[in-house]
Amino acid sequence: MSTPPTSDVDLFADDVVLDPYPAHAELRECGPVVHLPRNDVYALTRYDVVRDALADWESFSSASIAFNPMANEALTGTSLASDPPAHTQLRAALTENLSPRALRGLKAGIDTKADALVAELVEKGSFEAIDALARAFPLAVVADLIGFTGHVRANMLRWGQAAMQVLGPMNQRTAENFPIAGELYTWCSQVKAEDLAEGSVGRGIFEAEARGAIPPDTAGHIIHQYLGAGVDSTIAAIGNIVALFAEHPDQLALVRADPTLVPAAFNEVLRYWAPINTWGRLATKDVEVGGTVIPAGAQVAVLLGAGNRDPRHYDDPDTFLVERNPVDHLGFGYGPHGCAGQGLARLEAHAVIEALSRRVERLVAGPEVRVPGNTTRSIEALPVLEVIPA
Image (cartoon, rainbow, N blue to C red; front, side):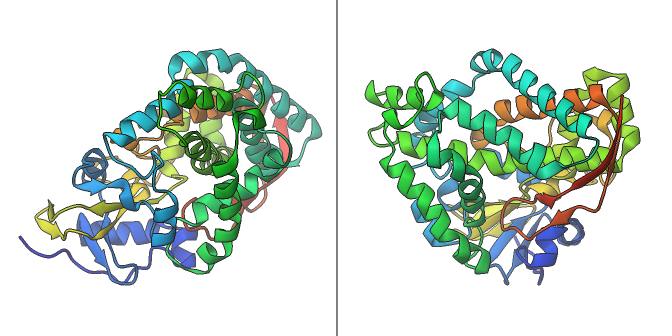
């Protein structure tokens, strides 16, 4: 066994988080595991090793999903940062209201909301896609689902963004967002059932706690995950849908011609532009990967975006092709910690793609604006200058 190769790539440098794909290609060619001294991590770079690590919770623990100890400490006790068997119990309460059966009851309302919003924007002829669609739609869906009201509803975007920023290393972005994430942590530690709308999923989580289905004082942690882990990444994905269809009108035309391609199109959006490119794990022991050893106690960086563009797994990976239908993409993670909210995210994204493909023949967009982010790679602003309606 040998030690992994080393690279001076900084995963959290501004230029890398804005466009990670050149760095990902460089790291994949170095090897399946690469030591990055600048981040003090061992990066998993290729599809197979990323997927295997996500499945192997005994070797790669979720006790260190963030790249700084303060965030990991704050996340202790959540299903995001726990391993089986504790994780299994906590996740069951999280997913009870996100099962296919539960989501079927939400589909008609989500489809109607998306279609009405897209129709209104098409009527305007031009709009700012991130504020008017990518943010407005999932924020409304999640707020109604969990039962958020008042100041919580008004703070969802700030809190969701901050919760993801603080997962990075202790850089300026993390430091600036800790106070905002702290507001979310504080609220989640104090929230009571009566603070949430009657009949909401949030109330249901408190009911599960009351009947002993989850440990005492964990309902707030679970609600934190709906907001912290789900909102920001879904906003990023919906913004990416608009940008990619504007950039690739031929791919939008394919979906228009064949609406059964809607799920495939979303899978390809998540593969091509993963909302989350880097996620943390902790090596619980010396782990052999690809003929090299990751030492026990090492912080591991799981490069989801690099795996999604691995030419060993996908043909022509740097081309956006909706007919590819990469059902095995890593955009939602994999294994026991695969995104618990992916069913809801799919409902929302499919509804947006269906509405756009039905109502829009062509989108003409201006240049997208991105700002560096530690965890979520998203578009900050995207002017749609002209809509050619169907």
